[in-house]
Image (cartoon, rainbow, N blue to C red):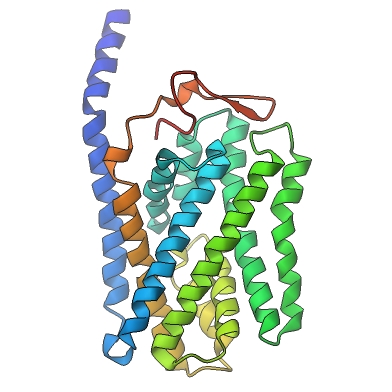
Amino acid sequence: MRLRRLRWTKALAAIVPALRIVRFVLAVAIVVAMGVVAVRSVRFEALTPWLLAPALAAAVVWWILLARGWAILASGRTTAGDMGLWCRTQVLRYLPGGIWAPTSRVALVGGSGVDRLATVAAENVVSLCAALAVGGAALAASGRPVAAVLAVAVAIPPAAARLASGRTRLDPVRVRRATANALAAFACYVLAAVLVQAAVSGLHQPLLVAGAAAISWAAGFVVVFTPGGLGARELAYAGLLASSFARADLAAAAVAMRATTIAAELLVLLAAGRPSSVGTEPPPKNRTTNGGRDSRHRSGKYGAGR
């Protein structure tokens, strides 16, 4: 029995590199397919093309920072392995159901069951609260003061971390770092949205556009039954700006923004999620938690086994 188990283990170890390559290729294929669908709906002749380059750059930074936020929560520091895991699993949100990306991270992140669930939940809450806070602040600055109440959302993750301190690896310092990172990420996201809208209709009411972009991202995020928030995000964006922009301009900008973010995701996936960034890390069994803090195997680093 032991010999048979050893043979199975060796056989599995032999095919793991191939499986990693297949997983990466499938992830890239999903993103490319979504990008083709989005690009086919964009009338590029109606855009100011030079504005799309800085918009793409801002979207790339946004995506990198989101991946970094996951790494901070998962291991307390920025690691290529953690960021690569996030990039590869994030593409699963395009599958029907909308739960496969966080579910896969629960399975892969390692640690106790409580730590796994808490890390994935914290990532979602931090991103949502940061988007609401940035959106609320931008809308308030644009002349809608009621929206300022949304800025309070930024205090939710640190407050929750203090309440749960000592029960998981998510100590308050780690969560505060992740929250600050997420705020920077969504500042880049709304900058990309403003540039895309400007490429369509000129630079008008940038703070209003920024606020609508962040709030609509949050709307698409919570509507889990649509793959990647497709449709929900664009409808929310158009609805928030309907009184200030032509409907055709809003539709064009929403689709162009979707294409821009998908292009950014593909670029980061190719750079950070390729198989060569995997396999240099120790297996998840080396990861344990001790009083809410990570204890790492002396021969490896935390955040491994991606």
